[in-house]
Image (cartoon, rainbow, N blue to C red; front, side, top):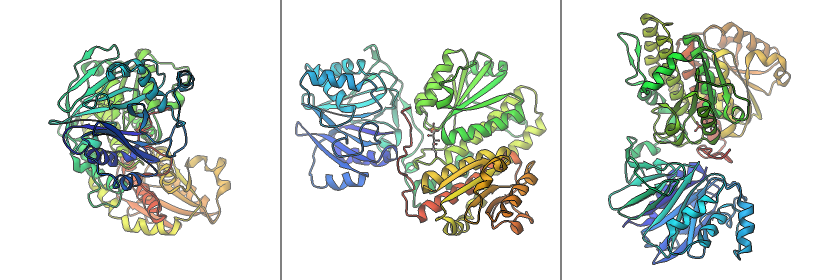
Length: 607
Ligand code: F6R
């Protein structure tokens, strides 16, 4: 959702904050603004639209401030407009906010009764006035008092003309990290914002209020007690958050997949013995031995990874697995206990619905294991154990390398479970590990077809609809391929289990409907061929993703994209990459903003 950056030090605050916002723009991009303590006075510059507009506006000023806060917005309350853009102001203080204040209407009435005028439709302005109304010379105290009255989620940054040597931050259910620099302090919604200035981070916990000066930081917990928080060193390097010659982050991230898979599985296996290692707690190890059911909960692309995880766990570990969408799961009558393991999957580690499911289930006595990409994120911190994907920062809003590293983690986890349950011998485990190790090189071969897939995209980019079909392990790939296409190219696309085609979607098939079929060699190959025949019999256009050397499909399909042969379980890494490249080129050829598609945000921290 929205992105927040705050800086205090000796350097130009506007440069540091603008640089940070550039790296956070993936979190929100309908408007942006900055608030600086310029010669003791608050100066605010705001713009509607992309950050580039703010960059233009700010050129008119010659700021010298060394402290300030900035924001990129993803609208929740009030449409994207100049008046709704953050920062907001109340007398001598200014604020930026990420999250949703659920009781803002009653607070607004109360504050209007006290004479405050509102200039925006946002819930944020309520927080500004709420802090101001109780301000008596102690900004930290006023923030602590105000946040106690808020219902909902927030990460806020506040500056005041009355206390120009400090920044105050607070968070609940929205992420905030403090970057600890040398003679300067920063805070941001996400690590990449300030990664070029520090690798040392402190993660704020629920209900924390932090006070930053240029040389110090103090954190007070939800009870107002001064708290000790560990500094974590982040091993991402700033270059990982750059485009490095690629046209878009998404393109770079697609091409990074061989490397990120290697990084994710490194150290997790021993080929000689077929053993699998997981960096989990002893308590988690014990509970994994006792479980008799697994529930996987996630959203969007991460949910698709979960569907493949189910396939791995049922096949290797013979455990019943349910996979649920977090926003549905959390509202059901759940049957969970200490013999059920909850796995949450989240790239960002901040997705509100997934986090909420985790919290509900923890109270019911189940262990929670999370697969997560961001060290120190809320989901990572609140889980009993975490398997980190080592994808590095994923900046493109459409998830790519996070997905394949989630698959790699789930595959390794399923092997681990199969081994501890005595269901997989050394030889078989070794065979699967060898297959997994071979995937990055096979992926390079898929990536090398980039130009051919671009040609295909040129032919079909103007289609109005697409159907994606797959069966068994290929079904989640059909869902994911369709999601990727719709979210960045805005072409309507449906992912369907291939066997369901006859139960409805077949009615859509005509000469204008391209149908993507995942039809690699494996247990359901013949069934996929039958589906292709059925589409062709109705004049549909078939683009098949098939195995290299398949002599049959090129004859009956309109187009094929080939992927190297691999075991069925791991073919998903290769097939999904083909669909990612296709979606990328369609969007790029249509001239769309690939990295920041309309209406979407990278980290969905509201329900
Ligand atoms: C799609 C996409 C989203 C996310 C979803 C969950 O490309 O990125 O569907 O997968 O919002 O996000 P995380 O994994 O951060 O919980």
